[in-house]
Length: 186
Image (tube, rainbow, N blue to C red; front, top):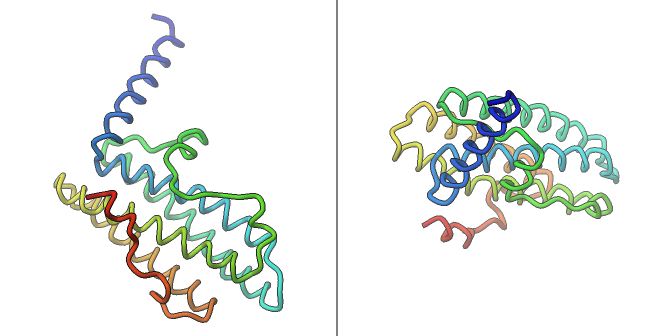
């Protein structure tokens, strides 16, 4: 077998296993959704920081810059944790695009500052659905350290939600309510 054939066979086996894992979700598969969400979130945070306008724009940019830095640290931490758990983290733009549950739009750069910041809250709230599901799956699969890291990530997401809600003049949970999409995971 040629080296290229060997590489192709390994990738095919990985993709087959990923398909199986995503149809009967495992903690690893769910965390790949989280990883993909945070890759797209990184792009969206940059978009906001580049295009946000208004009297508080410079203050918002400082908060965004900190969130981008911490989000990138979480992205790496989660990918490393997947590897520690003998899982394969998504590593291509095609995989991130397939597994993310966040949406990006070029026209978002024209939103007003409040609408831009609200998209961060919405994205982190969406991501929390996947993080909490991954926590439950890690517990079910008896993977305590995986579960612990995910609980820490949930805390970081919640902290970011509180920060962005405060920038919008809201309390941490104001306007968020229960998400009906959680029913999809039952």
